[in-house]
Length: 514
Image 1 (cartoon, rainbow, N blue to C red):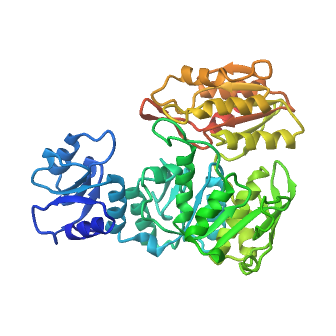
Image 2: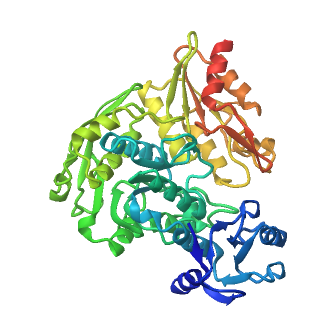
């Protein structure tokens, strides 16, 4: 892979990003590397001065390591002697130039993207499972849990972000293409648009699952309007669009889709009992739940319109990931796979085998309650899990282990308290990625909004002990929910990812100790 200075200048001009340039040598000279981390510069490299914490010394280090061109929003004296590309927006410039450096790998992949306040990961795993049944070992995955770019050693690994930085995104796409993969299923977070990680990227299919207030606060979205705007950018940049007709703010989402996508390429789905506000709105697919239990869920996907029938994905489906709310995620996955040419028989076969780390993992503890590990990490996802279990087990005693992240998502703390007040009997407040904040302060923010007359609060900052305490305190008919981290294998503490055994391992250890 390589890119010339001349190509960089032309691309930046094309996207109205170039403010000025200072050329020190031949513009046709090729740069064989690209980086935003000076430690990864080796030889002639295009280097990006990116981030609020960028320090000019990093540019000096990049120069010493062989960088020949730097991209920044202002000139740096440390870059004297290098080609300089001064741009309007560094993250947009990095996205555009990274795609070009890796020779636009998205053009060689069929890309299905998901956005939503909840359900992105589950839907992505469902979709990949279906596509893998149709095209074994040909499907890449970019999720908040795992990244799959191939099937060799080191080509399946844990993710750091739901949607990686643009340079990493296009690098991994190119790796997937070079490994012979033909499809990509990816999550697209609101932060991906806020930080321009997917700037310039177009998806073959974009799926809008739902939206509710989240990620609003310092270092995140300034308000809900900004959050919703960023969410909708994914469907604006999709060739075909699938929308959950039951989502909040449906009118705004649907209008955004129709602005850039022809009506024939917009598909709506909803549950069989849903009645839209607009009686003239045509729902393309309905899904009808038959059985929901703690082992599996069964539903029928019913095509309603002619274009829905043409996809040939109507029929009966079974999923192993419990929770009635996951039937909606599964329906979206089946429809998106149908747009990729997968039929109902193949889809049903692939979907039935999907399991997802950290999503409604169930454990039975002799002499104690049923334990569920789930990633539920915001108001809507926690409410979905607790309301489902409350209904499924006929109003059992619910013991919930939960914490909240530090440095961001401050609104979640009060939101968690609201859900706990509605459903929990016991709340075990603990640590969950406190960052640079005090864990005690975070827990106090949650606790101050909990109704102590309704919920018995336990504070235990050692997450492993909190999990063990909750399980030990449960009786045979009780339900214990370990929420918030799912399959995460670290705790973010003062800027460092400290190893964490995962909630599932902590549960297994607690059961063994009992």
